[in-house]
Structure formats: C-alpha cells, structure tokens
Amino acid sequence: MAKAHKPRNYKFLDKFAYFLPGVGEMFILFVLLLLGSLLGTILSVPILLFTDQEQGMLIAQFIAYPMMFIPPMLYASSRSRQRSFSFHGVKLDNSHFSPMKGVVCALLVSLATLALAFSSDALMSVMPKMPEWLENVMKQLVTGDNLLLNFIMVSVFAPFFEEWLCRGMVLRGLLANKIKPVWAIVISAIFFGVIHLNLWQALPAFLLGCLFGFVYYKTGSLKLTMLMHCVNNTFSLLMSNLNGFENVETWRDVFPDQRYWFIFAACILLLVLIVRAFLRIPQERAEGNMDRVNPLFEE
Image 1 (cartoon, helix red, strand yellow):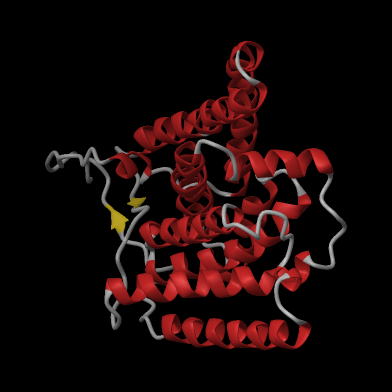
Image 2 (image 1 turned 180 degrees about the vertical axis):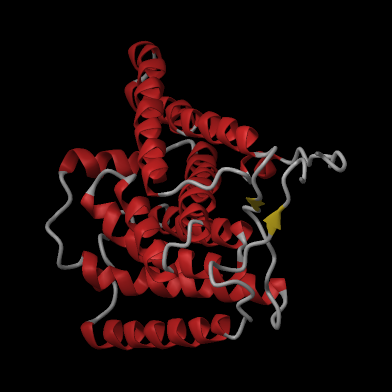
C-alpha cells in the first residue's frame, strides 16, 4: 500500500531519471536517432529548394539537427514515466565535486578537453584525407556569414543534445545496470563516435567520449560534460574563423615538429595530472557518483 504521495520535480532532465537503458535499449535509442535524422531531412527539403544553397544548407541543418533527438527524447520520457511509480531512478545531473570546488572542476575539465583535443590531432594527422563533400559539410558548420547560427549549432545544440544522449542516457543507463565502469565508459564513447556517422569525427569523438565518460563517472555531473563538449566545439569554431587558420587540417601544419611534440608531451602530462585529481573524488557507489531518485510511490 502506498504510504504517501511524493511530489514530482518537473525540471527537464528529471523527466528522464527513471529510464535506465541497458544495451538493448541503447540500440533502440540509436534507431530512433536515425529516424529523427530522416524526419529532419524531410522537413529541411523545402528550405533547400527555395533558398540560396549555402544559406539554405545551414538553416536546414539548424532545423534538422535538433529534430534528430526528438524521437529518442519522447521514447525516454515515456519509459521514464512508466517506471516512475515502482522503480528507483538515477539523476542525470549531480554535483559530486568534493574535495574540489565546482569552479575548479570546471576549469580542470576545460583544460583537459583542450589537451586531449590537441593530443588526438596526432592521430588525425596520419589518417587519409577527408572526402571533399564531407569537408564542405564540416566547413559549413564552422565557417560562413552567419556565425551566430554556427555557434548555436556547434556550441549549444551539440553539447546539450549529444551529452543528454551519450552520457545522460547511455552511460548512466549502463552504469545503473551494473556494467563494469570501464566497459560502460568505452561503450558509451563508441556510441558517441558512431552517431557522428563518419570516421574523421568518430575517432576523436571516441577519445573525447572516454574522457567525458570518466568525468561523468566520478562526478555524475552532466553540466561538466556539456561544458567540456562546448569548450571543444567552441575552440574548433574559433580556430576555423581566425585568419590564417581556415585551411589548417592538423596542428602539425602550424608547429615545427620539435615544438609540436613538446606541446604534445605537455598535453599528455596535463591530462594525467587532471585525471589523478579527479581520482581523488570519493567513490560513493561502484556504479558511479550518481544520486538515486525514489519512486513516486513507495511500498
């Protein structure tokens, strides 16, 4: 018999707290993401037909990109609502920062993100050249006349929606389902890479996803991983719009070899030190520092 009615919190992220997807439902989310991508493409066709090609492509992407995430969000919200009467949930966003302060954590993860982005550039420098059509699509996202739309797409939409899906849904769900943390982080990072749908973005996304996943595991903070994602994307956006950097493909095109490898080594050292700092955060639960949410009714 129910003891008492617990008032629900209607904050946006709390709508998904009771949905804890395992591996099977992770694939359902991916299929729904593809369905959303198809719907977004269909909706953007009229824009492409009746506007200037370059401007129309940007506006079409601005509409189609968030549309990708609507089907998985509707599904996750529905499943969470179904479970909320009888199962515990797990908060998407937590604040386990002690013994550090939140602002210190934010600074450290921002530095770690930039250090890893520079380090992963060594991998990109040995990859085959990106196909011209894909290179043109990528340039439209970070260059052009409408920098505001570019910023919203790259630095606001992408960090919010992709972190909601890859860390807030997939990683949180895998950890809550008792998948070994290292494997949960790796699987969610692979998922993060795969949703980019091309090898040239997938490989650095996988590396960044491992770092984002580690930070989420230690802090439970979706705010931090969104910040990290935003820092990475905004830095790329700024560099792509600086005079002299428009056609730079890797940092090896900018620095002489000796200086490049010195900076590379410094970035790896910085990453190690920051990871060690986050390892000092006490581990409250084996599945990660994520707070549980009680069901709407308790027996």
